[in-house]
Structure formats: structure tokens, C-alpha cells
Length: 367
Image 1 (cartoon, rainbow, N blue to C red):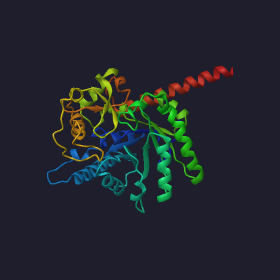
Image 2 (cartoon, rainbow, N blue to C red):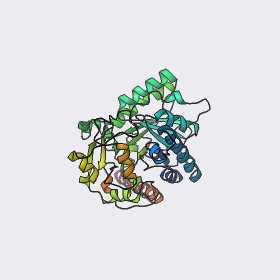
Image 3 (cartoon, rainbow, N blue to C red):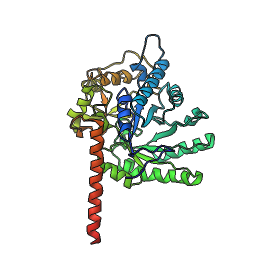
Image 4 (cartoon, helix red, strand yellow):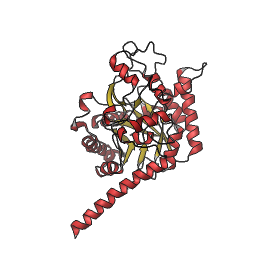
């Protein structure tokens, strides 16, 4: 299996658990994945809701929540722990600074271009910076900006394809267009990044994400040149996932026709599982009333049909009359809830079966 190296970090397996908010991937899931040799990721999105106190500001609650989750993860694991921070968050800067102060191993940034991310690095900082992109053009823009302004290049790049769950960096018309598929975009991003690697003598691994579900999927992405893979959906149906059991059972009971593209108040399309709440949104009978958090820069509370922060918080608690669950395109394939150890063992077993089959076919051809 290909070795994934991000700076001086070398996980035993080239598997990154995607950051999933609100509350879906916290210290419990991140630590469990890190203990199995992957990279566990805490989502910073929504921590202000989970850790809110009457005396706190939105920013203070988010910072305290992130600090506590990092500490909890460190207590449970000595593996590699990352934090996922959405660029679109109004407290993005504060969360980045907190992650660096807590010496988290990696910061993953998506839902926007983190053009000024290296500016927050401190002199003694060892935290790696990994932007999440949806195109070669975005990857090139970030590399050019970082090297010109900060003399710094990304420590890795995550390319997230259109089959991912949650907010998607594509127009709705592009989601089924083969031109924008992960398989089509991955070689383009690798080629773009290779030019910077050669020019500046720095290794920048490209990690494939979005719609990766089986060991066969992982094998295909690594054969296409990816240095590792990121997956989220399959990790939801684990006992260590931090969401309510009802959230996990929604994945298990979902059918392919239940997974749909929605228009998020954030201003991006998203992929989610149909719930009574989303049906009311579709019918036009759901109204936000007010915006209590102002957590997303691109969310216009005057025109939004609902508060996405509250909807995701209710889902995290298992209340689908008031919320919904984001999910990848393969969520309907989830059949049961297992431990992270079991899930990783299954994934690697699937990968090894493909390798053995390919090796067997190659041997036959030689004969």
C-alpha cells in the first residue's frame, strides 16, 4: 500500500477520516481512527453550539470547545489528530489560532479558499496546513498565493469530488458531469501540484476524497496517483462516531432514493438524506424565524429557509423533525453499525482482495 507522508507525519495507513460537523466527528471518532493507524479529524464546525454557556460569546464557546476536544483526543490517542475548519465560518481565524496554539498535527480547510492560512503560523509551529479543493485551478491559486506571499506551500492537498457529503464545491449542474468527477479531476490536480513540487523541492501529496467507500475505491484512487484517501460516510456508522445512535441508524435505514441534493443557506449545494424536516423545507413550510449565531459568512438569514446550524445540531442529537443529516452518495450502502477497528479491518481486507486479484491476473498473463 502506498505510504502517505505529510511533512514529518507518516500514518500507518493512507486513510484520513473526513471532518464532519455539527458534532459528528469529535474526539471520540478522531481518536479511534488515529489509534487504528489513520488520521483522525475533529470538525470545528458547530462547537459553539455544543459548548455554549450563557456567559460565553459565540467565539469563546467555539474556542473552548475545540480546545477541550483536542485535549480529549490526545488523552485517548497518541496517533495523528487533525482539525477541519470551514473557511466560511465567521470565527475561522480564532479556530485556526486555537488549533495552532494547541499544536494540533494538521489543519484541513475547505468551504472556501484559505488564501491567508499560513499567516497564522507561529515560529515554533509544527502544525501542517492542508487545503481542500474541488479543482486544479483552486489548487494552483492557493499554491501561487501561499508561495508568493508567505514563502510556504501546502503540506498536502485534498481533492474532494462531487460525490462527497455535506457542502459541495461545485455547481449543481456539474455534479453528474463526468468532466468534474473525482477520477477526471485527480490527474489534473496531481499534474498542477507536481510543477510546484519540482520548482520548490517539496513533497505535496494529493489526497482523493468524495464517494470513496470500499477498498476497491481506495485501490483505484491510489492507482490514479493519489497518495491517500479521505472518507467520511463509512465512519459515521461506527460506535465511536460522536453523533447520536439515531443519526447512525438513519444511514443504515436510508435507500438510494433518500439521498438528495439540497440548496443550503450557505449558498452551496449539499448532499443529504431526506428527513421530515427537509420535506417541510421543500414544501416551503419551514421558516428560520431569526439567526441566533451568525456562524457562516455566506448565509443570508433574511432569505434563508432555515438555520442550518440549528438543523445540523438537532440532527446530531437524533431529532429529524427539526434537522437533517449530510451524507455522501454511498450512504445507502451502509448496512450496520460497527466499531472503527472492524470498519478499518473490512476496508483493508477489501483493498487486499483487489491487490491479490490483480496479482493473480498478472501472473496468468505472464504464463
